[in-house]
Image (tube, rainbow, N blue to C red):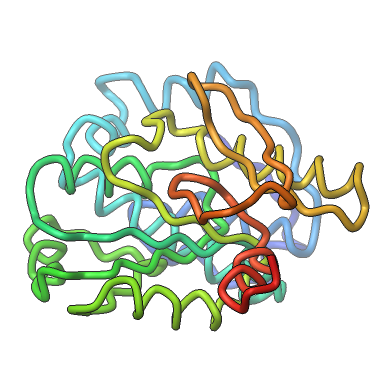
Length: 239
């Protein structure tokens, strides 16, 4: 892989920072002051998938992949902070017990292509941080909230949400595709833009995204992405 950059822009930013995503993080800072040219996909495919590439282990070894992912998301968050780009979505995930299914669902969430979210883990086990340490997961988007009373704690957290969108994900039924969150957010944004003041939850049915009119909302359903305003009104008795 080659990077051709004029000295004028290279001297305006510091050098490489964090392994194993130092190239990507360098590009992020570079694009804040100049444009970059398209890199042919063939080169990127080789970099990620060729057995002789240094990056190959980051996608085939789960521990190295978690290390790469944590660093990758940390760098993206730092870029958002520099550009004052706020997070869009708050995710709540209930952990009632620790098992392989719990780990699988967490991995699927952290591997989503959509990354503008904060993940609040409502931990009924009181010990999920130890599990994260064992798994070597140190994602900057995760906030663990130990609790014994899930429903009352969730209500408190919902009323304090500051992002435009919010979702409560159930471990066993949320789609496993890495594009799930990205598709839901795009569907909700498009619906809101087309219908002005009308707000819609978006959800999956038979692996396809759908929209639900807020006027028909009688309960808050898990695995549905809501405008935060709807849920706050719901808890306040306004729907």
